[in-house]
Image 1 (cartoon, helix red, strand yellow):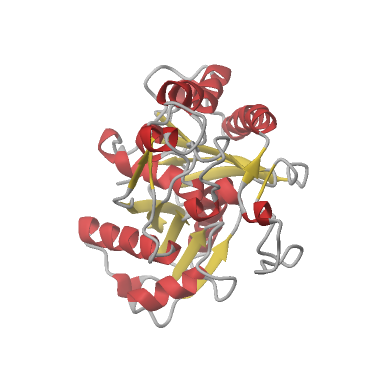
Image 2 (cartoon, one colour):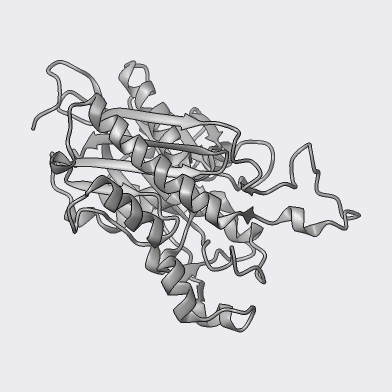
Length: 332
């Protein structure tokens, strides 16, 4: 079905780029560090390996390389970029924004650049914000980045988290289109999940201090059972809501790209929505959970499957809790 409206200005994804570090952390590596094994990890998560950023690099470095990949593959002109929105939970530093640092590294001197932190839902939040900027007509070339160096906050000896998380960056370019693009987004958040998924230290409540003996506050912690249940329910509900609002059925959707948190969560959401086999995209097996980067990286790695006009639905769930879904026409 055609759900685009005549004479409407859309924000369309016109280019995509990605970057994953070269270093790998395999299940075999983790077997040497804690009480776990390859079979157990694959059964519980679907993950075989994840990428780990080099110590001397930061989140902005991955984002820059993802943007350079986008420019090289699609022939876009960086000088025309007028806004950069960066979804990240792992900024280079508390201030300035990582988006500012990215702009400097790219040589962009007149660009509106800022960060958005909504954890694993961050890319969806940034995408909707960027779409709104384009739809006003005031911005014509908006980069939406999802990038996280989450391995920095993982306790390498904690098997509840070390098996899940990896590093990476993905980016899309939004430009105005009258033919189609981002159609709608349903985004939600509350404070109910703060205790179940967090990194406590590093802010004003628990500043990092060398004298602080409670080093565990520096690491990412989660209650896996609670997060699993909430993620499946929230992502399924958000997808249903955004489809209902746009008179769309699952049969109309060509591709579903969920946040790559855990293969069991991805499968459970698919069953809940009755998504036809083969339409849910996943790359978690070799990248793990890259937080805000999972959705753009998954699209980036599967871009050859998508055809112009395909209807694509995204959905995510993250700390906070935060969650949502969005739907758009693929216009590349």
